Image (cartoon, rainbow, N blue to C red; front, side):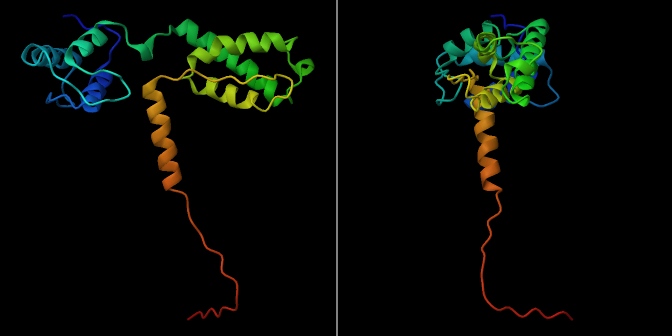
Length: 184
């Protein structure tokens, strides 16, 4: 079995930790040793079952198929990412100019913006794309909402970050009345 080359060492370690695969690894291991450990694991445990996770992998066979296909997180080329980032920059500039097409140097009609948004929403893992979608929600000229397509891994990271941020919020209580403060 050959793993697809698009999986990094970090991706493989994340799979092990998320699916609770009983593979012992060290952070000093390189990618090829982790590949070997996976192959040994598949040979000794061909029918293992995993707990449900955002990867939607239930067993060893599905994991083997998953690892032979390209990594879904790394499907963009550098040129595609640069193109998406350029479009996102143009849309953010349009939003910062008060949602006025007349002030935009890149757009002449709202349909052009909608076309560009329909193209970049498929790359929701990029933070600038998510920002564009959020900013265009406030545009009264475009009566349509855009939902970015976010991979399960990034969605989990965003949810964890949102939970941590909510837990860190300071709670305060306002009391009114007469208080005496004494300084020594």
